Amino acid sequence: MIFSFFSNAQNASSSPYSFYGIGDLVFKGNVEIRSMGGINMINDSIHININNSASLPDIMFTTFTIGSNFNYTKFKTESQSETANRTSIDYIALAVPISKKFGAAFAVMPFTSVGYKIQNIYTDVSIPSIRYTGTGGTNKVYGGVGYKINNNFRIGADMNFNFGNITTNNISFVSDIQYGTRELNTSEITGFNFNTSLMYNKLINKKTTIFGSLIYSPESTLSLSNERKIAVVQFSESFGEVVINEEDVPVNDAKVKYPSKIAIGFGIGEVRKWSVGAELSFIQASNFGNRFDDIDDVSYENVTKYNFGGYYMPDYSSFSSYFKRITYRGGFNYQNTGLIINNESINNFGITFGLGLPLGGSFSNVNVGFEFGKRGTTNSGLIQENYSNLSVSFSLNDKWFIKRKYD
Image (cartoon, rainbow, N blue to C red; front, top):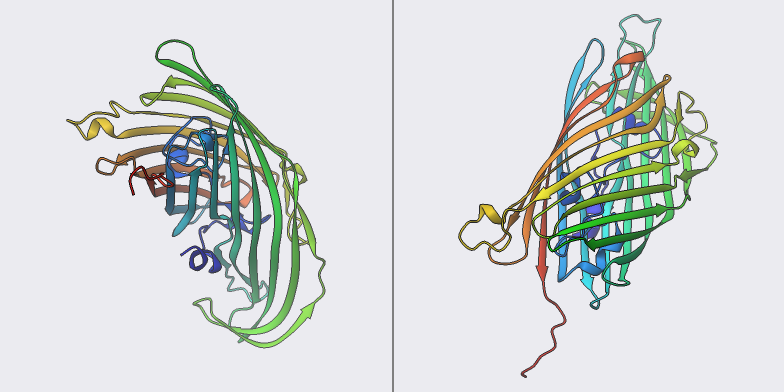
């Protein structure tokens, strides 16, 4: 399943903004985390938090989780609007409690995605029409460990191998002329990045706990092997094309700086009852770059991200009411994405909701998340995206490595 999912690139994005950098960020955390606005500091013993490896020592059972996402987006300019939808696998992960103080996890997930189809058609033969398409993205293989220092502190670290392929294609043509000119760009991407994390929690009275987290990701480098081909093509209205003549054009390979990140979170709550928290992230994205040197209509800025959310569970041990054992989640987030196009910062705002639905009498559950948000602007000839996401995950828990008492 793992290799079939990720050997074939998924178009998890339909955004024209995915043209820039290495594509749209599609993995934003597990469904449970996304449903709480993206906060990462709440301890959880039956769910994997891939974004914060310091949470792994608290995993009680061997936990397997798989998540998927359905996205619907309405694109709007000052004069036009269109819609698109995408369905994709978000992640597959497995966590194992090695001991009472040590936990480990492995995961694979699509990390960024490129996916768009845009065309500007002019009937005036003096102005060439242009068609843009893009596919591909990067995937991530994750390995993380966490250690419980004492009842208050936990530390964690994870290593990620990033790999993928991005293809962008643009065709220039004139109406009523049979052939057009195509520029085809491809990039093979590889690289590693590393994250460290610290979690803290302390009981301040009989029921109430305060908790916090610190996540640090140093800057790393992604290597891109680039190719470009120019061709004369015959094309169709359904975005098909037949190559008539093609030749290679020399282009430089690239190194893209994967930005450093610091995230600080703080919260308060009652374990297995309710929790609320806030997280502030700083991402040094101003050093980020593009895959090719001749993409010059974009620049990058440092990112500041705000996340706020929490959960409420009426009675996790209730035998009389299923609805009392449901976990109710909610939150919101806001950030400048780091992209500056036509001197306009591309900002994003989202509101999230979610439910954790227990399966039978076990600790396993189904998690459903909803997200509604807006990204971009119609100013300066740009595109505003109004999006909604429906995310579903299965979190399956079982006890492994039980020593036999009777044979």
